[in-house]
Image (cartoon, rainbow, N blue to C red; front, side, top):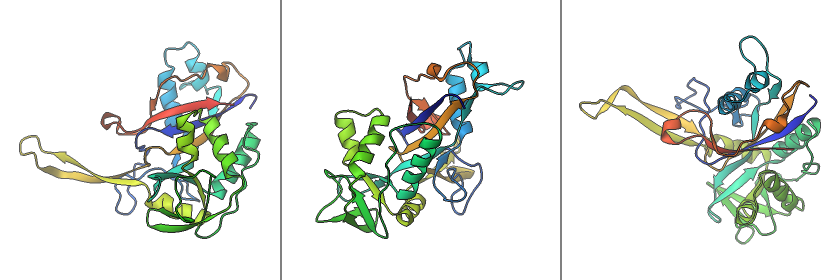
Length: 271
């Protein structure tokens, strides 16, 4: 691809991009990677929303394609970067792990995106690495959900948090809010959190006359919590239009449940 951009998706409300099939006790689970089990936003979900957003532009068909031709823009799946997790101190954490950071570094290098050259953090077992001004710890301990984690020294964590905040185009209080809650947990702990720290809510459909639950009108639906951050990439095949046209100045609704306010996301597309 001749031209590439980084895509960051920052969820402003809970995000449900589903698989359309039940898994266990959840009738409508979120989409996850097969190998890791981490939440993802499939490329098709974002591409369809962008196609609708830019539908009035003369170049939309050439960029996104139609039934007769492939589009010039190529999108990847959006992978989880930071998962919001409830914390006893500091309200919640933007949690990530060494595996996610290494994949981000490798993918950014492959797509020619700068700013993520040094993302290495050593965290094992029940350790957690924090920024120097973290709001999450007390007396060397951090409590995420029901996990008791021990703070370890992560010399690169401040730089990593700032690099991500810069790409998210956060500044001032917004950047401070993010960096003071940024945390790196071990791969095993993050895997556990990715399975248990999502939202599962009961949804009901009522009968119009009796206002009681309709037959088959009770189901359980999973969502990624608000404040989650995903990353992905977009590139061109060398044809017009340029990715410079990919300018978004308002939140987009992605995934299901639009009428109950889910899926509102800030979309940042940058180099």
